Image (cartoon, rainbow, N blue to C red; front, side):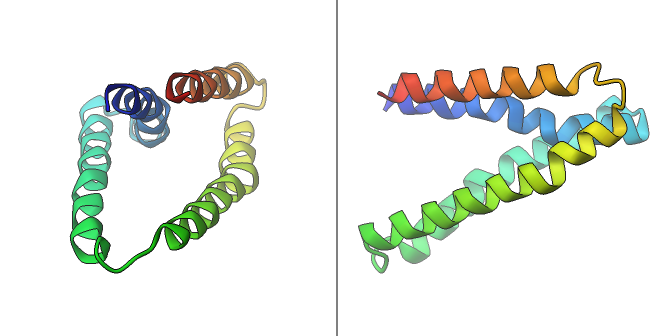
Length: 116
């Protein structure tokens, strides 16, 4: 319950930054970035609720495991092949990218430690 909620909350910080920072740097508008971040944040629980309502009685634990494995693989591929190279392209002096990656990894490790 509570530990999972805290872990998800910690995970949402870098995820929100990944949504809002590119919009802020592209437009220079903090409110536009904030609105898109809020929109992205609220879409997840709504989609989760809809998915649960449709699939809760149909899908098995094994199917959930396979789906989670596939989705995590997709997320890793997007990060390594698209997001990180793009970040380095826009920060050629590496003033924030490497530090941000390491801080993001630390936050993810902390969220995994809280789940245990």
